[in-house]
Length: 368
Image (tube, rainbow, N blue to C red):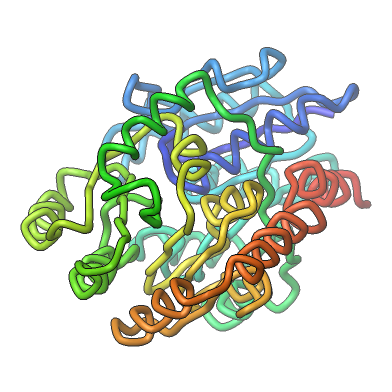
């Protein structure tokens, strides 16, 4: 079976990581021939191609910034040459795959799959949504939502009622050779050996709402805590980064992007997510895989993962509510924390491994 995955770039977002991890897992199936197509050319600022299974054929479509009409034809030719049995699109892969998809809409030998990674109206730029919605309604494309909450937004936004739900998965955690280096760096920010370390992993963006995290930790300056923010920042969001840096205070440290985020999660006590909307965050699943306590806003698919007081803490998107949630954690007894950590790891192993995610997709690829 030939499977072609199409995604915008191999950047450091959760959708990109999930796509690469899924490709790697599916490539281990003996009868699968995997192609990964990035619309944009690959650069050194993106994830390393060394992260890909050697059996995967990686192709780029040479897309230019903005809406690049010529990409429709280039991608059409790439797919026509591959002759895939399955075309699985993510993010803007559906939009730019429109020519090939429409041309082959009545071909019974090709199965089209599209995964929506976020609440529907936020998954891609609004300018692309008309074409994507038209394709999803008019062509036999199997639509996948990461959670029931996202499925509900697909029904409302795209007027599609039959989306499947497949939870994101992540591979079993593998720490890097830079583990000690990450621990040493975090040690520089701790006030003493008992300091509780909170980590926020996500790009600098209004969606991630790091400004609320900064405000909360300014109120905690007398507590033995620090918050570390790890994530990339585009040129567009440089003003936000400057505001966060200016407001950070002594308890918040903005570290930028790291190529080994799992090592930083490992050396932290709490995974802190303050987003105003989300799909099913890969970083949260990675925190679960390492048995970390998570304090997250109750948005998107997060309530499908975190059960308040059982395997983490849920709170509203509100500074006071988040502040109280942090205080709740700081007042917990060690036995309670250890039980939440145990439950977090158990949740990952039961529901969110990449092996189980890939099996669910393989059922869609082969279903007649």
